[in-house]
Length: 127
Image (cartoon, rainbow, N blue to C red; front, side, top):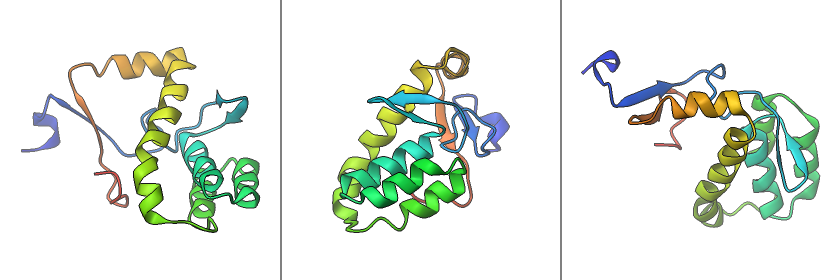
């Protein structure tokens, strides 16, 4: 069934969508300002594994692709530990992003009754 015929789904894939982890908007968690939920996620990943050097580098770039690339270089990374924690991290980041930005929250609330679906052909992690 084509995407347009699936009324209970809201697809997104580009960084211009407020549902994208790469969408730029400021929000704060525990006193730290982030510019994307990708930055928050990769910072949290580095912090989880005690790699404060990489965490600081993630905070110094405002480019989501660079934030993601730095997150792939976290020292001491353990996939089992990250897999157990990553969904909670993403939830906290998105909660902060939408609850602190009323216009984005309206976009989210406008999807009521649908399931958000990331339709990126490059991201195979978030299925």
